[in-house]
Length: 191
Length: 192
Image (tube, rainbow over all chains, first blue to last red; front, side):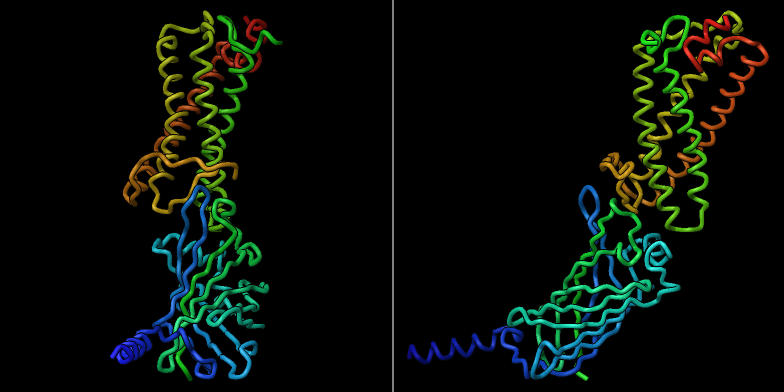
């Protein structure tokens, strides 16, 4: 009797377990196209005196490839269109798009190409790659955390810090921090 | 020289003279900078010039408060006998108005950045953050203070021009010590 109850409880617990807790690498392996619907690319910049400044990019595209045998051979490509930046303040958006910051007219794409992926735990990896913005390329690191895998859809939560001064976007420092904190949710659809 | 720092009943001291010209320079410079910064095409240059304008605005406010304190705690030199009855009555009004503009301009600028929805912190010369005035932020409030700041600037600079013309009239027409006593403490006695 007790054994049956325990068994049922264990079965129920398995059902309730989040899908991402036990994603097998072999299940996750494959190529994914980043779907804008379930994805977001947000950023925050700290302000002198406290508080911060938030924004998001509405348009971007990319692919995620997870290698079947070796996570280290996985790859991420991401292209962000800075023209689509949004902060909730039209004047700030125009400023960010202008040659003061992104110069979206002359540099319409910000690109990230991964060069190495290192698994740091069951569900996390450190992604290193080349970030190119306004014609300048530097190595940057992002932490990716697997958020789930369900029916050919994979979800990652990606965070990282980028120094904007290196890309010729140092306007407003030190009133606004040089550090841009990225917080992305990237949802990939298989195929 | 050491005794010439403070004012006396017959002349201005160095402290008053230096504050007068330093504030004059910043006040006129701020007008020119303000005029340019809102017309310049480059968004980056505009942003940086606006921050510079804010920096000098806060410096101006500090100097003006110091100047008013110094004026209240010091003797005010008497006007020379060449000054007529009408000017004896109007000059103090004009000088009071000049002080009012020196305070109203930085304060209206401070109000403008405080109510702006852009919420750009004020950090004069990148040194430290100056808090906003306790005013509600809105686009309407920003438009109001922007206009107020401009009207005050035009009226203030018009008064400065009038003040300068009056000083030149004293120097070249009435040939009294009114202008030169604001240049060095000793020149007051030289002319009189």
